[in-house]
Length: 253
Image 1 (cartoon, rainbow, N blue to C red):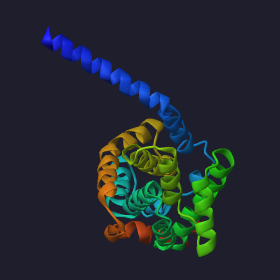
Image 2 (image 1 turned 90 degrees about the horizontal axis):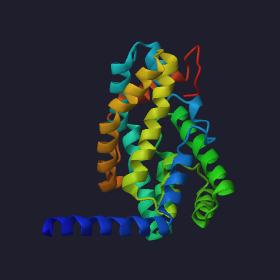
Image 3 (image 1 turned 90 degrees about the vertical axis):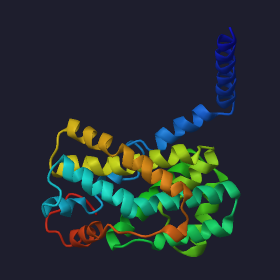
């Protein structure tokens, strides 16, 4: 009887918590998170391969296992890792209402690009992201971020824009960051499906194979600061540099 009473109490408490979350607007926040990371969101992400196009032509990526290895290295040791840290820092600055620190993070994120194509890839998507968010889901924090970018005369970074808006919407970092990284690798998997080429099922298998790396990178980035920034995925940077002069190209990076 005591055990049944405890189970009933837990179920009741769970129901109360869920009801409070619903009243607090959590379903709306998660719905918006899905919209912001949807392929339908007009950022032009489909036109970038993050150097993957050259890696395929050079033979470094030729099938699903090599695609997974390439993207996992970038996610855990390269630019994907840095993007996760910038997201976390921007999210914390927004929660703490620290404008000075947010300015520093936004400026550093804009400059922290190894190649001209990576800079274009980040700024073009971030600019489109910021403009669309301000038009469809306006928020004062986005106006503040636009002022910061304008005052500093630098381009916005996608991870910063998304981190700021997720925090403002009240989406926990432990949910928003993995979703952001999942979208990051999924877009590159789609590029791999077109380039190698792979079947759609192989593409989904690649995304599934990267789930643990996404979770691990997210957990590390939540505890990291700008002092932890750095990259050891040199081949990704070299691939981007080589892509600038690649003769036949489908993608902009």
